[in-house]
Image 1 (cartoon, helix red, strand yellow):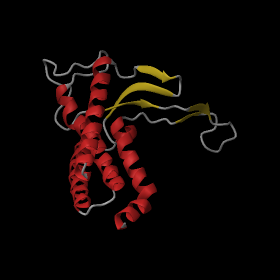
Image 2: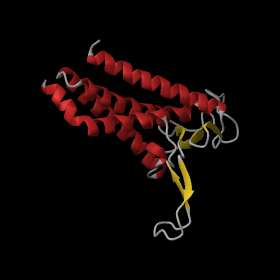
Image 3: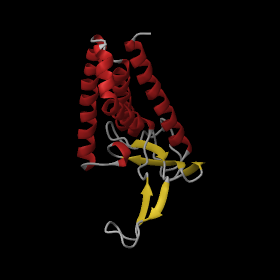
Image 4: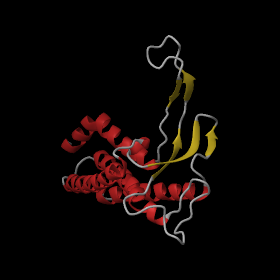
Length: 203
C-alpha cells in the first residue's frame, strides 16, 4: 500500500468516526448531559463551543468567521505540504502525522461550517438533523461538538498555595473531541519523533 493511500485512509477514517460520534451525541443528548464510562475518570460530557480546540474561544461572531477562514487556508496549506512530502518519499510516520492534523482540522471545520445549518438547537432537547424550520445558525456559524472528558484528578488547591488557594483543581479539565485529539497526536508525534522521521528519510 502506497503512502498516499495510507494517508487518505487515515484522513477519511478519522473524519468518518469523528462525524459519526458527533452526530450520535447531538441527536441523543442535551448540552450538559453526562455519561460515566470509566467511573469518574472518563466521562462522555456533551458541550458545544464557538471557537478553537479544547473549548477555547476568540473574538465572538467575527472571530468565529475569521477562525473558520483561517482553518480553510491552513488545511489547504497543510494538504499541499502533505502532497509534497509524499512525492519526496518522506517517512511514513511523518506522512501519517500530518494526515492526522489535516483530518482533525477538517473535522472541526465541518462542525463550524455546516452544523448550524443542518441541526436544531441542543439546549433543551436532543438536536434534530435537517429540521423543518432550518438549523440554529448560518454558514460558518455552527458550534463545534465536544464530548471527551477526563477529570482524572478532581481535588482542591491547598490553602497555602500561592496559586488559587482553596479553589477546585481538575486535571484534565478541557472537554474535547476526536478531531482535537487527532491534531494533538499528530503534532506531538512530529515533535517527539522528528529525528527518527529524518533518519528514515535519509535511509
